[in-house]
Length: 241
Picture 1 (tube, one colour):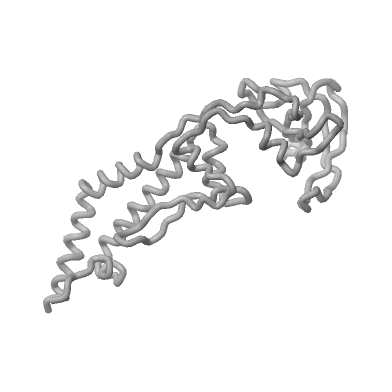
Picture 2 (cartoon, helix red, strand yellow):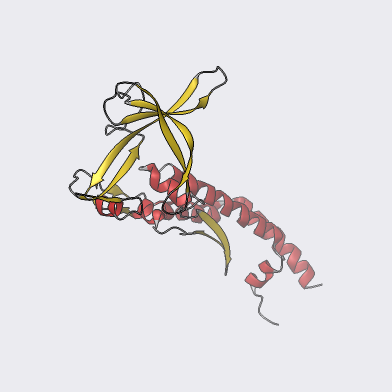
């Protein structure tokens, strides 16, 4: 008698209930993994890891491997965002990377870049309640930047305080007819700037925790044992007819 290859039998669809259970378990584990990543702090890293847009990490995917299914990270971006989520990162000086950006310019004092921020240093939102608004600006058209990308062109509508570096941007009227605004604070980073050192990030070690939960479920879930028993019984009935 030839040896029975369980993997080949699964691939042939001989164990449908078992395969259905494993697919369901894998999808549930993937959803839980994504939830942990989404709730990671600082949240930007989790968002970028799961993003399928330009520059994003591509999110979590599922593929067939010998013996079952595997959840893996696409790692499609230029930076391994999930590695930071899982393992953390030490103190990081953001200034060199910012000044290497294609958006950085060169002035009489060297390289510089203007960064829009939507939160204040204390973590509060940039808005009329928390900041003094310099002026209001409105969309006036579009232009192509140096990278060939279409950008929105803004023009000043009215002065508010005329002080500071916080601006309100008209987004259009809401149903009530009132104008809706977004807010941003603009900071300049130059070769002489300080204070752009990012604090260490504590990793979450999510993958080992998810793996532990999956292993526990596989060992103890009676639904899996029942699915295997039904599939084996049907297979043996056909095999020994």
